[in-house]
Image 1 (cartoon, rainbow, N blue to C red):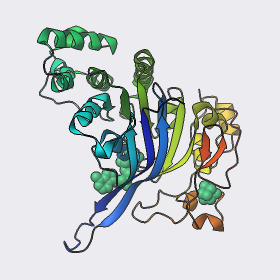
Image 2 (image 1 turned 135 degrees about the horizontal axis):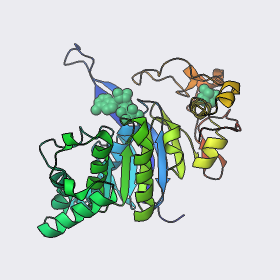
Image 3 (image 1 turned 90 degrees about the vertical axis):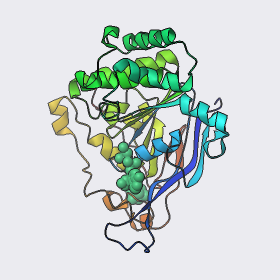
Image 4 (image 1 turned 120 degrees about the vertical axis):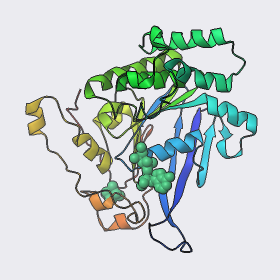
Length: 336
Ligand SMILES: Nc1ncnc2c1ncn2[C@@H]1O[C@H](COP(=O)(O)OP(=O)(O)O)[C@@H](O)[C@H]1O
Ligand code: SF4
Ligand SMILES: [Mg+2]
């Protein structure tokens, strides 16, 4: 494999949290939002990151863009350690890695016009760009993401959720980033426009040769756009495989449960399907279960699962699973 554009090596992120009403001198509790996560991203590759809400996906994204410090491990961007970048490299990293957020309207400044919003990162990173060139690039991008360029002087509240997300996409792309991180970019949108926005991102990723991390809580959103999928649970990696292998032969009990919760459009097949139900709630991240963090909800859990944390075991080419008792399961019918 060529040098990865991004390499995560045992990345951990811990937050200090105080219970409300606790005395100021009592030490804060440690919340491990991300725990020893490792994976690489090749240039031009799209990796999907999935897991229920609270599994550490957004925190991982923030560790990659550098807005939250990792408490352990390393984030390497183009081989350079984020923690020890010099000022110039850090500025370049801030331009090269752009992000798209879940709530499109909240991410846009309501007092700025669409043109100003899209142009802002360009003006920040390349202040010498002539105004006419800025305007040209803004209009070109608006067209590219499916917005009418003559709407350049409108304000965000005049647009629908899907259009606001297109504005966010144009804003992220105007500085020609190398890596685009999409944090649940369609979760807040109407189901009818979700596919349009995912397709747009897929086209842009392919046409511009972008590397991409696409975060979602739902496998059905990431499976088409991702080359590879990473499954997280309570801050830990559970399984990673190519999109095809993960969707057709998942090995980890958690992945199997996630896939079983994706509805099949054909009602007969849907009815005939045996469905391992994911029981119980996500445990508190302040007191995660010992050993395998999934064991309190795992249908295959046994005494040994409470012991040591299961390491990621290679079960095939590019396919690793954090469960010593994993067995691949053939999934015949997955939603289209
Ligand atoms: N700034 C913060 N301070 C304390 N805890 C946080 C902070 N940000 C996230 N968390 C906690 O970290 C865990 C992972 O959160 P998050 O990364 O947002 O998960 P996801 O994006 O998968 O829903 C959650 O338990 C969340 O409450
Ligand atoms: S290690 Fe045990 S609890 Fe964890 S997924 Fe495997 S069987 Fe289930
Ligand atoms: Mg999130």
